[in-house]
Image (cartoon, rainbow, N blue to C red; front, side):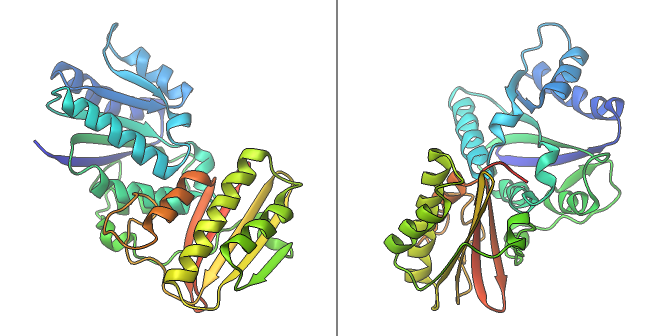
Length: 304
């Protein structure tokens, strides 16, 4: 049967987690369905111990798979397509995010949880997303309930379809670098001018890979703002330690496609591929709208 069944479990103990996840995994393997578990080491060990010896469930490194939302969607879609091509009647996914994303990075991971309701719906897949209420803040739990049609461990029924959830305006990230004065503030730069200026501003703070990723992302953002946004275009950069944060603002409303950045092209909207590249390249991306227009915030370097 085609269609994505997207569920979450809010748990407050190891026993609570296993009481939901272990039966879900055992039922899948008993039915001959591929089961993929993307957990961190601790919970992977707990689940392995609760399963029968020789269980065919496949365990992946959750930390590696969930490095970036767009990358996770891309990887999962490839896995699902491979299993469908091999004749799988249905596939089961179990995953968890590292609690470190519950801070400044939660905005784009909430967008991920909403977007997969659409992004996986062409596949016969059941997913179970696991969140520990001992570490997940209240605003994270609220978003979990809005992004999953079914939530175990919650009496709420707050599901919001992705076309609605993803159109909500984001806010500037709560990033410590924003507390200081920008090291760079450009008005209406060309993409090339922005690339060179950001490279010079961040060179002393970033390694080669992070620097190249940031420069590429800034170039794409300025190109999109100049072609599809509204003037003026402003580029600001903050840098400190081993991190850098760049904001590209224009006077427009931003992309119309609610899945922009998370999927390469959904509606064929101009600029969608560039934004998707940015989501693949940066450590955190926030799409924000306010009275000044649309801003894409891009951070690289170790998460704060």
